[in-house]
Length: 574
Image (cartoon, rainbow, N blue to C red; front, side, top):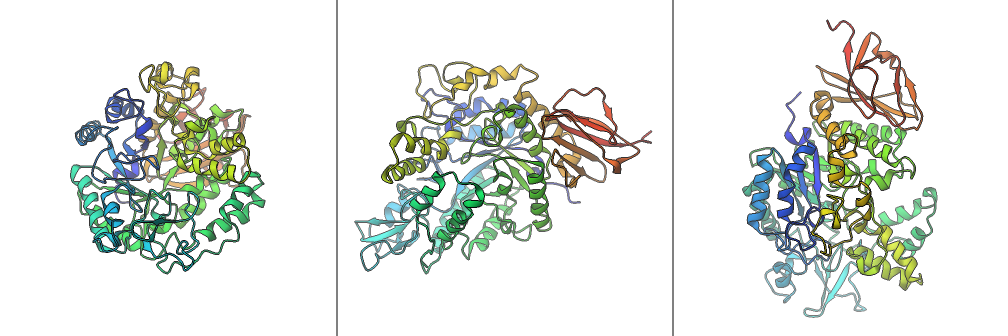
């Protein structure tokens, strides 16, 4: 077994900068606030911080429309502030991974301003420009993933430019070697400064079919919206997702993508310190042969359910781990800035607190690198906005207008927009039971409303001193993981494959074996792990108080919703 790299054994923690901590009192998170909270992150036990975009941006897509790849957004601070943040994290033993948006820039980026200035500008071919169709309309019938046509007409030059996302996010032309060179220079800028790697945004969309082959979905986006609005059962919406895939078939995962990832991997590997590349995508093909493309690829299929059950998790792990190429390393997560918060997404409305602990234990004990989203450790929940003027996610704004245009009453359209809006999981982190939840000073209007449940214990300050809080549960759980070699490096072996009440598996290294048993029911469960006859279990971690330090694997009783981790000890250990 090769020694594991730092990114294989650490716990990643995603920071959404705009909502993490407001250091200057303007209602927006910033580097001053992040620097002030580095000690909090160190005591949580995480070892790597992934920052959502911190670059200058007009914020058409909350920072994912970048106007300068080597700068810092003024509302977040300065480049010197970033350096202090980086140095402060490194001094505390934590790594920093930045978001890298390769597919598109902002329309305000100087490159695009030059590109759209004239047809013969040297940067014209840095983006995707095409003549109108014979009828004067878009070059083809491709859609934007955020609604409407994927083409926007430019009056100045009489051509359309392509954008997979918002019209304010024109796609770069990666078939132009000058684009690649300029982007690699930006990558080197941050690597030279000392950042530890990148999370790659929207990599599926970097290339598009150069022949502009028309899409052949039988449904329009409005028709898809109508089906989604009806809340049909999954078996009746299968066609919806099939047609959705057909709609974007010629705009994602096109030839050239893996060659580009190999080139980026070679660039990153030329730097010391085992820098890491993490892909926003779930296709195992992005691992390449396990050593020549991305280091980590998110296991998003684990998240694609309304309820995490033992059968679902077991099936996911069986399929995912078997598909990995040799030497590739898994990466698991349950939340991020684009989806509902874990507490909300996977709760049952009755046992949410217990399930949140169980799901955390599952994530932190499966084989692979776990990635947490800021706020999960205190049980933050989705906040459904009630007024249109509160929306900051333009994807939700577009949906609202589309729904109203399709005859939906505004109040119902707003509820639909609130449900799909990514704002719901991006509200300010709740630091205290105080005005603005301690995120900003009293009286400041925060960029998104603060979830009012901060006043009911969902905040760091109230949980910090409570040994039974979710925050301290996360701290103990992460500490147990980091102190247990089998949980870091061990192979995964599922147990009791037909069991619906609990999930059980082994994590095994040559030196250590651990049993993980997670009870997904509200009733006690007694299980027998007969293969461990003659052994004892030393409790490493439990979400419940246990009567003894050692247990018999032949007769292990789990409390309702208990998360149990035990080291398997030989009976004759001496």
